[in-house]
Length: 289
Image 1 (spheres, rainbow, N blue to C red):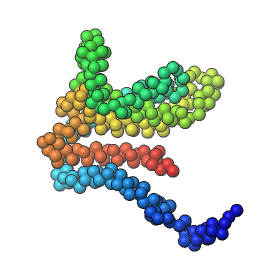
Image 2: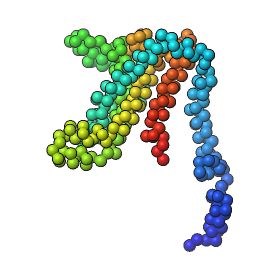
Image 3: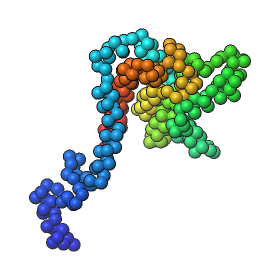
Image 4: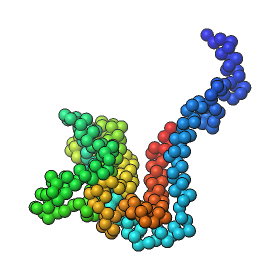
């Protein structure tokens, strides 16, 4: 039963346009009262994340920016970054999508452990990843020594090494995105296709792939952006040789030691690319309510 006190509160809410604000609450434009103990640290967190980006824009040498960005070294590093990031994303798609399907659709012993190993590069320090790649694919590595002796293939300190290092750190983003999309997709469509006589691979190619295409696209964009910004594993496994392994993040690091204005200009390019990636994904994640 509604008490007279509740009725008076409801009438007051109607007349004032909303519920009464208690102590320690602030009326905001979010459609509800926000407790002050939550609003203050939220604003501090927002400033903590946004302020460095604003400082980068403020300190950008706009007068010399065209000259900085048109130098041959910058275009060389940018071209290498774009080519290697795209190649790393292609490698991630070829082997990452089947891996995501395996984790999402097939029950096998140790699946949880395999998933943990697949996602390990997300939390592994990139430099450690580079050292691990050297131990595996270096000239004296577990696999690299056989590649060198049998086929004469040397991967470290080459452009191919850059692609491998970037794929190593970027592919988990693709796998996680595609696996999540596969788990959300109804597997009965695949089962219906196999019931009608399609092979498992045909069902995957003709039914599953169109269903999970948005997830693959989002994962590929994230993987590409992560590969473009990779630094630690690249410099450890591939080195920093202009024109061969020096990508944009490595060029930023090198320029910071001798020409801070050039480092800021290069950083601005990577910032613009990152914003463009987020803008491309806004319909998938940012508009979700």
